Length: 554
Image 1: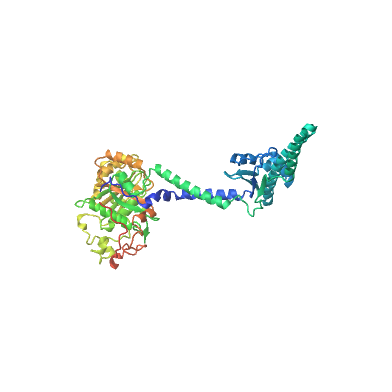
Image 2: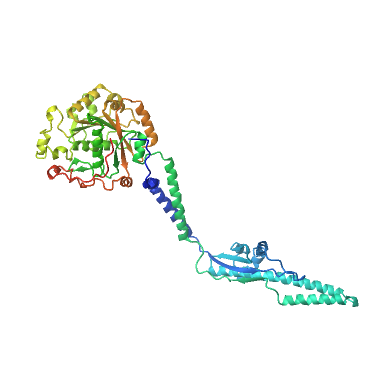
């Protein structure tokens, strides 16, 4: 296969950063939305009332010169008269405001619009009626203030004319006095009927509902912002996340053939009637893995297989347990040897009691026969469907028809515990005695399946890599990183005689699994092991269904 070919991205690939960190998105949205809603829900209500004042310039009452067209600057300058402490003091007295003039000014906002002669006055208060009273009070005071200013200019002009009349005496001043009297009479008439300088329009009314706070509106806004922020954070984290997330990532990073993709399952090591079985989620992937191993070398399939990983926690022991069951299904007699001497776990996965193990045999404290224990299984083999369909269980286990004359063991699945941890595990595993015991197991069983320590954690596995016919590495989605794989490849370059067969991708999330065509795992098989996996399935006949996933190429 071409490892340099970049697969086309799927829709789920774009969603993976969000799906992998859905909890982060959920926490961000819940905290932000709930916090904003609670904050604004406890704030006091604020009511807003608005009114408008129309402003015009009547011109100079003394000279009679008409006003120039109003400009935005003139309107803005006029509006500044609103925002004065003197106006606030008058309004406070008129509306019986309980606070200070400065507090009253803080509740008023004045705005003008470009190209218009209207001034908008907005008041905010915790009481709806008070908000309307403040807006109307300032508008009325503004109108009165402009009118008084205009009348004051007329009064000053009249007083000036009166002074001039008092000095214009004698016959020579008759014409002058006549002109002054005419001008004064016009001003007096203007004062009695003043022109409209400012007028309030659209008087403010008490609002029916508060303008703020708006807890629901603000919470929705916070939800959208927090959702976008959390999604952006997920993609930002993904950008710097070095963990492998897809089968393509694992295959290309390891630079090895992908032998199987194992989905996440709630019970990776199930039991049925006291015997170990393959779970419904694992049946097809491990059968596909078994086929790939057999096809890797058709003329001489590997008889000694080491399963290991780069670092702890990637699921190698679970893979060994289920691969052994899959090999047993094909009629092979398999022995599983737990040589992870520092952290053995296969005994518990296979439900085997404690007892003598491999290191006891190395020290000479027990024989190899005493260290080998039979593993109870509930797996139907090919023999159950072909040669042994009519034989009893006693006859099968006593070697009838199994070619036992060549010295091979009749036990379908055997297990050798690790035994007590030696003082120097690498030296123990590289000894001639270990090589001899493994060769003896190879002579007695069809397949020797070895669970070894992670290669980057300790050096125990190096002699086993050189001994085995094939080595399988396990990588785990969301755990194995690109940096770890790079170190592993550097390590393998220093062990040129290791026969590395391929990589197994473990713990594919279910949503990812469905996107790869595994809508229902174990399609065509019963979920309780009653069809195709029970001890009597050979008598009932095998009912095959469509494979949930195409086999990986060897």
